[in-house]
Image 1 (tube, rainbow, N blue to C red):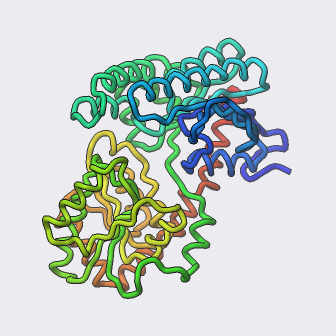
Image 2: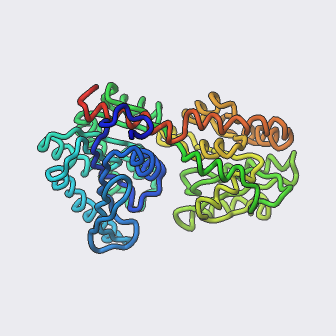
Image 3: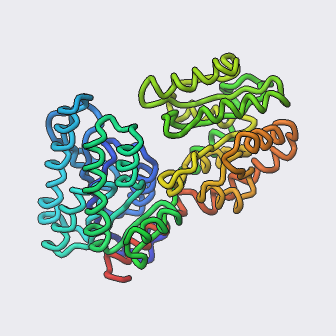
Length: 418
């Protein structure tokens, strides 16, 4: 019997994916979209991935609609260890050639890898397969930005990597691809401006596994935020590039009108300096007891903080790199039925406008604070706004819906259709 979205009983593709995601994948655009939704429609999907855990030898394991070919890794933090990790990854990606020669695939897909992309193009040409490239983040631009602003640990290496990958991406990978999958309309505009071919691009925004949120949203047990606490919650990474000291200054303004308001920061930074900056700003403003740091939590527990919040916030510092992203946290907040305050990032502005589930304001402390205060004080408005989110997500951002789009495009590629 055909799975959801399949046109006929033989409408199946056979896909080989090499991705920067580690094994086992945790990002929902791989683990759920491919590993669950597309796999459940009985498409054959094999994977070339590097191990997340320390591993000295390659191995194979059934996963995500086929077999995962898992490569060794090095988790050391020294420059030598990082180089060794990358070399192991490239050597493992050479499996693309062997699998393309021996496997019965329609399409070779490479996601967020550049040397592997070149290997994928060569394999596709030699063995007459279609080639698809998936870009979820502007990696070359990020490497160059971090080399310029000094946030890279090895700025010269980041600059070399950024320039090399930029050339590979825009001059070799994208022109050779039969289809290009990107995360947002803004990323599409940026890629086309940089020289990418517009006629091959398909925009696939981030989504969620709706069933998980429906169960959690309808469960009132195991509260993690005390009943009666008036608060707003941020869920996500606390890295410095996010400029989240902004939220602590927003809290100071909110408390001028809602004196007992608290801010919950649910997540962790990449190193101790990330959170040290936030603690320092909280001390400077005398807000140590009003800013709660939960640290990194399991997914289910972290989402309970969003469920229990009065307001959820999604601040994205306005930079060209972050502007091209498709934020998952905003969609998660909406799926949880919470009213949201976000800033005017392109994708967030679109989602808030279409859903009516919150406020989209400028990146400005007073504007953010005023919107949060309004929702903390006018609980009926907050309830109505939050109630609009789940239906919007079910129509537009559930991976069951997104899988229909991706399945259609991959089937068209496999059949040689434009």
